[in-house]
Image (tube, rainbow, N blue to C red; front, side, top):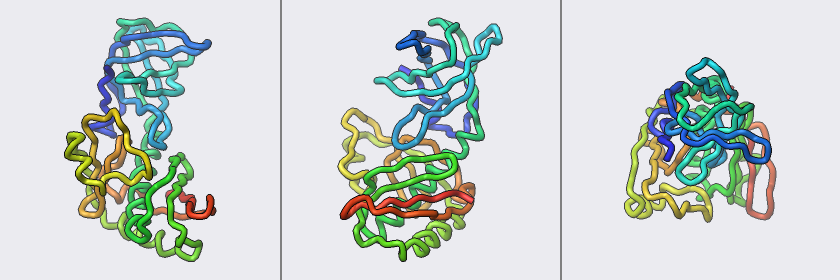
Length: 239
């Protein structure tokens, strides 16, 4: 089982770890570690990249990571790591921090759209430069964009603190407001991670986030598409 350090501290950039499994699959090299700061792709958030360095000072580029069961497997750019190796992990911090800001902005967008239109999220994808979110709100039109954008930036400017807590599955499921993804509820999670944005919003979430909304900057909605009779997609950037 990989200890996922990013779940409790999104700002941790480095850590020491041990390789528990190293293997080659379809010509690609993978290493599972006993602990990691690398966020594995999931929940609309891309995987972190960075480097893993062994005790000999040899560096391996981490180009992708994914969770398999309880383990996080890191795809590296070449072979050379073996089970039992002591290593140091280091994130591409600039990239990670962009995703943290984007992810927190996505929660604010989701909360505003849900409050205004009763909409649930049907899809999302974070990007370094631009993020998109799909939601079931047939009443949402392009004319509503300035209002949603203004409300999001007003909330960001409040400099609200962001905190993390954990709840047992049974207790969390008794709070349906924690779950904003339509028709999606993970079946294998025994303890949910709960993200709170001040007094504004609380949602179940497994991604990385900033400590305060003011770190986000400002959001700018740059596009919208109709994705069917009821689904709407908005795109935004951070300034």
